[in-house]
Length: 151
Image (tube, rainbow, N blue to C red; front, side, top):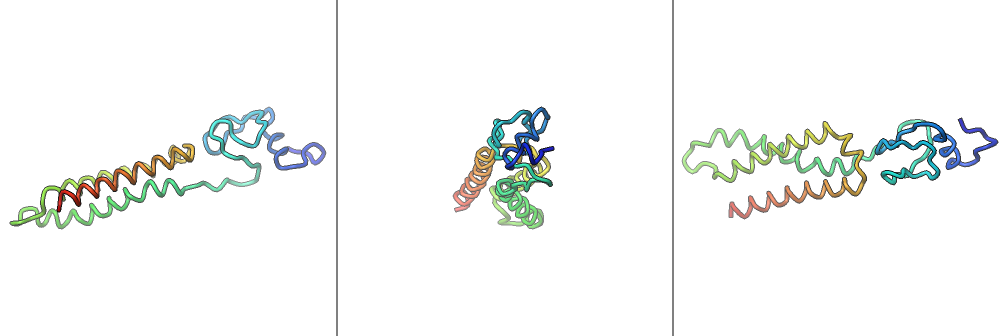
């Protein structure tokens, strides 16, 4: 425990706290034993010593999950009319079935991302941004392809 005589700033308190002690980085789990700077050497997360849990950053997780959740909900809502009208003359064209299947798979993957959210949240922010951008890109490309096929 930092003493008032040896540690005068929060930066020194952190350094004294990790001195000779195994402490995991709250973002990546890297061992911060004997850390000299208030930054994780593994993931570059700025560190502070405080009482209580750090506020987790869910923004990029939500950004990565939104397209899959939306696609899954749409696929569920479209599934009922597809089943009802599948044999009707002039029924839905085949690309609609592919789009619905894409929506279901996307929704299941979004649920999987939620289940494994700790893995995603442990990634560096740049990797989270890249993953969210890829998810959005795939969904925008699929939507564009559907529009192109249906026109």
